[in-house]
Picture 1 (cartoon, rainbow, N blue to C red):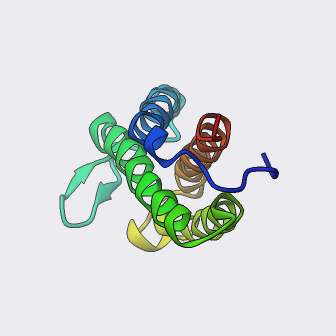
Picture 2: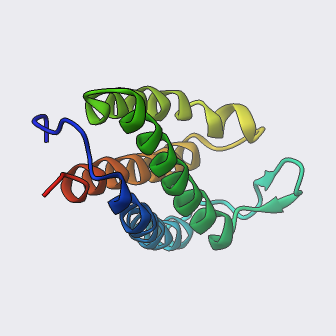
Length: 139
């Protein structure tokens, strides 16, 4: 993957939704597992919505960032000679920053639930970086 220079940006039109769908599928399974084993606590309410986390926000939070990531990579490809290298760095930094989100954004979240949600963040970032690196190389 490190040999990628410019990417075939038009491939992002199908790769970004593909990455989003894969991440959403994996995270849906993780959500169901987390709920079944008690890591996802229905008593913990999401601020602003005052509802527990359900599978719908999990799907949306997996799919939409993948589309945004596609736009970011397309922009980097337009301006930079080695867009994927910069994209990976940005992805890692944003992933690390996202780890505080469950703990800062959901008051009283149990540690196990926060860690489980962070595993889901890793799934999205990993799926996006893998799919973009694997499928956007110029042929």
